[in-house]
Image (cartoon, rainbow, N blue to C red; front, side, top):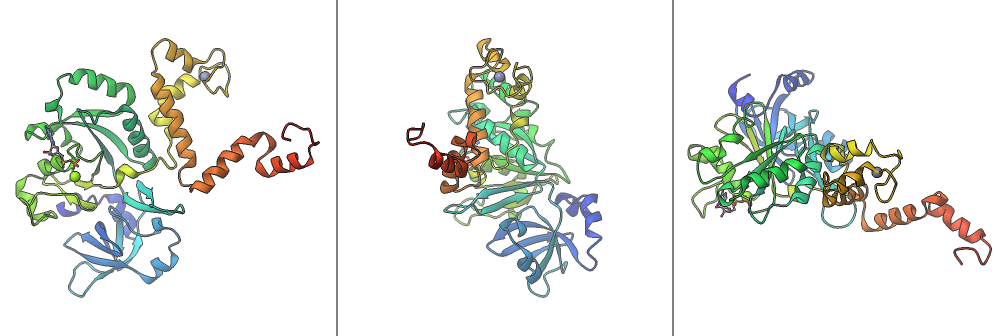
Length: 361
Ligand SMILES: Nc1nc2c(ncn2[C@@H]2O[C@H](COP(=O)(O)OP(=O)(O)O)[C@@H](O)[C@H]2O)c(=O)[nH]1
Ligand SMILES: [Mg+2]
Ligand SMILES: [Zn+2]
């Protein structure tokens, strides 16, 4: 494996999987524009589109390639027009969001991300509830989250902020950075290395692009998507996978903030609450008013913040509704309301067959 392949994130696992596709070449999708993909291989990069068969067999948007995908293409150079993507290799992590508008079609955002840098600025952007949301999304997608606190230069009480983040980001690395100096981004470099792919997420304006520019250094800027109208700095207009000088891949991901907590596995994010719940007297404790509830106990004693519990409930609810359209959410609510009757259908039957002066007349 050459260093370019390592930088692109190719691992032995991918090479191994690729061997089952004879006469095809391993590549990685680095950008996407509608149905055209830019694919980087061991030697070069070129445009590609999907094969008729892949398109034909695709049932969901997730069945199409997305940025970060390892794919099998029919060529290793761009001598004879666009290449054809025949196969998407197994994804180690996957992020998608619900498309705007009706229906519940989702749109793939990125795949094969090892670390998600959850960027949060140490100013008014600082919000622990939003952090909990991002943590849930990262875990759910199959990547390891790292909390990156940006603009440390603007913060006079770093310790207080770090303490607050620690109480929320259980078992997660927390890093404070500033883009004002080169050394301010050093703590990030241990994650950005050959074979690894990092995605930056966080609100607009927290300094993601500035961090990425710092990591890239001026000398590599020529390889980046540059804007003609300014100093040629990397600006985010679309998702793209970028190779850093140290040989790690980063993805600047506009749109990641709209990710829903679909399929969210909140167990990791709220491990403390899950653990407490194990000590509640009742196995099905809802932590609202039950006696000997360990969760409420922790809130009383100040070991758990009420806001955290509230957010846990909110995300749980959302996770169950995520992927449903408004009408389906309504149905879900009604179903829940009539759950005691065995669902809405039975509830209707029950009402119909009830004596006139029954509880629902
Ligand atoms: N004080 C300070 N400002 C920063 C820092 N990093 C970025 N900024 C500024 O924050 C603004 C938004 O940065 P940008 O990288 O475009 O944010 P993005 O939307 O997350 O990509 C710009 O004006 C940057 O100059 C930092 O570490 N400290
Ligand atoms: Mg940006
Ligand atoms: Zn309880």
